[in-house]
Image (cartoon, rainbow, N blue to C red; front, side, top):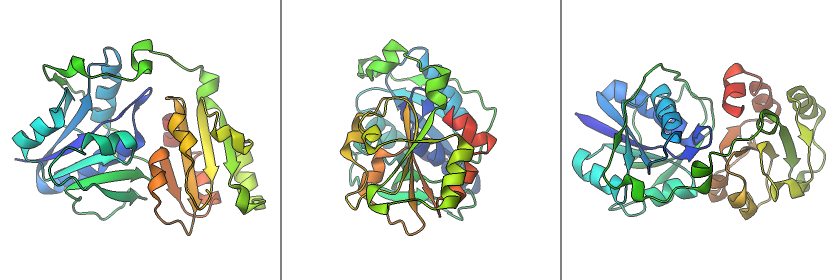
Length: 275
């Protein structure tokens, strides 16, 4: 049987959006080509592993392995996957850096009706749409022998949880060079309950959802690398957006004129993902 391998990057609420969309795409390709979907996640996270297992099952995986050192290399040698998908993040790219001929291809998937019949040998996924699977699959994960030797982020052991208020808060920052935003965008932001924030908010993003409307030519700032683990970044680059390597610092990169994705954020699925 053919195999597709997905790197499931941990987050406090489950897995990274790039991993979520990778799983949905892999489920489509796997169904078309008769391939099995295997998710991998590093380390032994105790109770948090249940959250990861629930997420990868919900979005389309057939199995889950918590891996140790060289765990991906071992699975690649054994399974010979037709495709490997990782989130387009620093962690996702690092996870496959040691594989032979590792050249992850960044891909921005912007709609569920994607028309993709295959993925690259290694795809680095940028999440630009909602997941289109919400399955009731219950997975019984496997653990590699040395998975407990993997150092996990401090928040996994601390099991720190934000308050409901912190998780629900939405603020937005408009790139300074863009000036005033249009009335339709302002109305869409008000409808979401998003409040304006100064550019310094980017340096101090410690919870909830930060909407970034546009970015300087240099791309998303390095300070986002230091954001809190449970702080989300939704980047809206605008309708003329072109890929930038700094997009690895965002959780979601939503396409189109700003009012369109802002209106979409009212959907129940978005509310679930951002809560």
